[in-house]
Amino acid sequence: MCTPSPGKLFDARFARPQAFVNLHVEVTADRRFGTNSYLVMDEDTHDAVVIDSNLEPELVIDAAGARAAKVKAILLTHTDLDHIAGLHELREAFGSIPIAVHESERAVVSEGKPLRREFGPLATQIDNVATLREGEPYRAGSLEFEVLHTPGHSPGGVTLKIDGYLFTGDALFAGSIGRSDFANSDGRKLIDGIRSQLLSQPDEMIVYSGHGPATTIGRERTINPFLT
Ligand SMILES: [Zn+2]
Image 1: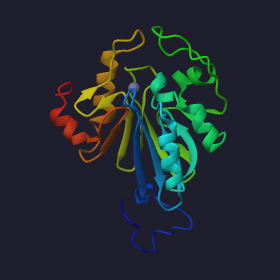
Image 2: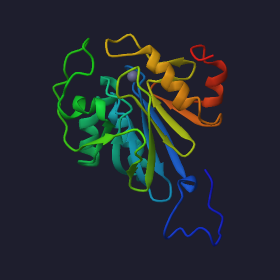
Image 3: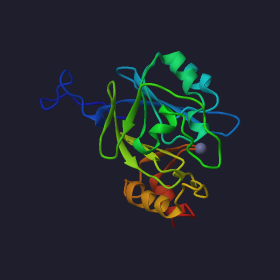
Image 4: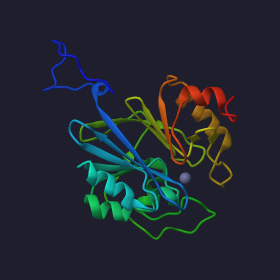
């Protein structure tokens, strides 16, 4: 992004404003659902997180290995199966790091409770689950994420914001928005959350979605048929 200019007001030994973080973002998509799993790494410290865990976890594991990333946590935008499928493999690769999820979908991961009435339970229970709450920053090593609640596709849908990036999960896509036809979806909340939490962001913010290509807030504000 940008490099801090030397100056008396800023001493890197004590504090590093988030605006000066050099981030590397890498996307991997599985071939079955085209679900994105992101590696987000601080280029200076190599501290990293994985955002969402698709059906081909080896792709993001390889990306982390190639960058010598120190993966500190796994963050989930929500808990539909295609976003959590690779959790066990990621844990095997990265150790028992925290898996952070919004409080209202926590039981899906920690107790194997089904997210959707339409699908069966996952029969998987995972320990070391951390809770994401709106307004509470989530720190993983040198990375700090802002948590924006963007429900509607699912109750605990969150957008994770860091620097100039928004990881929107299945709330907002390039040219589209998430499904809201499940029993626990809410189309009104989905639109309201996108408008209040995402379209209120600056035009140049880069949007990394749960599926498909990246976009920007400015572009979606102008061309997204669900929002214009
Ligand atoms: Zn999805």
